[in-house]
Image 1 (cartoon, rainbow, N blue to C red):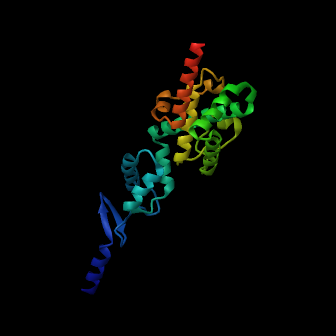
Image 2: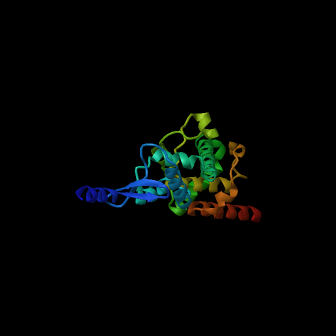
Image 3: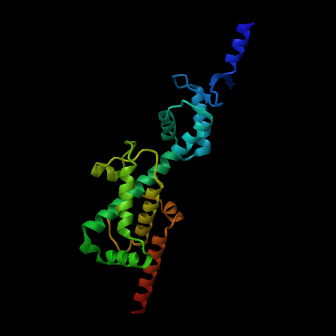
Length: 229
């Protein structure tokens, strides 16, 4: 009788999830890993990826709420294989290229970009947004978030810089949006080599920062003033 009671108590620590037998911890989290990658793990990752799409960290958090023991590498591997996720991060790499080439042009050829530099300085005074801080922020944030190499964009291949892994810092996205919006506004007045880089204007135009809006306003005022002359 004691053996039967003992077996019943032990059986309470296990549960069925589909056709798989899983171990249940005292905090009711389900352990879905037994030292190898099962079909159950793939199913869990696939379901949570559909909910958290796109974002590895959010996905891991959702899985941790219900399960434990699933290696992060499995999750990242699944996201890498997702075509939609790959396209999103490809756009990010292109934005980074766009920013860096403009950054190199602006800093390396100041004499050829006096008009561009004057507008940047004027905008800094008017909006109290220091462009130099945006540049420093994006470079620091980029360097801070490097976890490993998952792909290489054209700029990275030229300069040997590693591309950040799947996780993306929101600060980087904000600064890249500012940089890409600025480039979009001034493609007629500033000649750069970014024309060889394909990027999606529709994505760029969805998020317009305050700085980019002020750039647009200044450009329109300059055009109007030239018409009056």
